[in-house]
Amino acid sequence: MRLRTILAATAAIGLGAGALPAAAETFRAATWNVSGSPNDVFLNDFADQVREATGGEIDFEIFPGGVLLPADGTLPGIASGVAQLANITAAYIPSDMPVDAVTADLSFAADDQLALAFAKTEVGFFNEQMQKEIRGHDLVFVTSFSIGIYYPICSFDLSSVDDLDGRKVRTSSATQIEFATQYGAVPVSVPASEIYTGIQRGSLDCAFGDALFLTDYFKLNEVAQSVYRLPLGSNATGGYYMNEDFWAERTPEERRAMFKALSRATARSMIGYQAKVDQAWEAAEAAGVALNEPSEADMAALAEFNEAFIAKLAQSEMDKRGIDDPTQLIDDMVAAMDKWKGLLAEVDTTDLDAVTALLDREIFDRIDVETYGLD
Image (cartoon, helix red, strand yellow):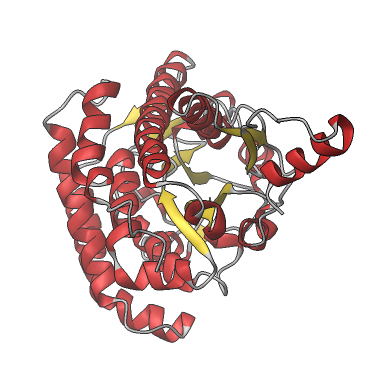
């Protein structure tokens, strides 16, 4: 039973048969990430915008920290209406979202966080294989995001990938392992919470992580000596999804208002993440961590690795995940990442209005609110 009906029925019991004022609806948005995390900030930003745009007719209460839905329970929680909006990390449920996992694996080839996030958002809306998987779970995809670009963060002065030979390295994906081992690195599996002490005590020589590993997440600027800024991908697994019934019950005008809010909240979230990355680099440099730029030879070797990796990815994903041929999905993602790198190079990526305008033009304004998510 919808909340408006419940409120009306309750009021009727208490007040008798008198006329009742219209009641706005309060819905639930959830993230398993903690309060103040990028996902929590995004949800609050979106809720504030929608509340204002609809005059309070659509309101969301935000539940961070997994208090409403845990990471591995978010998909069924949205589908059943426990929450009407939440972010899903598909890596936690690979058997439920194997197609989405392809985009996560492909993220190794990314070297631009914003371009990856916006490419994943575009492909999430317009790729048929992605949409088929999403709609099969009674979900409506509404936007995406990505974490930062990963680099080797080391306890010694790493200035070439050849220096990884014999070093113990904590990686975050099978592709990172493949790349590192071809240079003689020894992959070490440790929980994220043990990265700091591992580098401090010498049981780890390096960890592949984004700039926030140095500051917000693990304070590695206290124990690391260098970062070799060779881009070793990111992760664009999952995204934000709405409950199918909730979406269908909104008017086209309400859906458009939500898309406007989603576009701006996506832009603000990713711009904010990039600002934190820039601050992390500054803090690391101030702490004496060397930020070593990659050689042309290492960049060329990485490009060659990525080309071979992408060429074999479709077959690898079919073998590993038992899915239909994802060649079109891979092609769409590669093309979208290249496209968004070009688009973002033409604007100030700290300008919220400019980035939002790009997202509107290239993605959100292209979506037909009369039909999307309703078939």
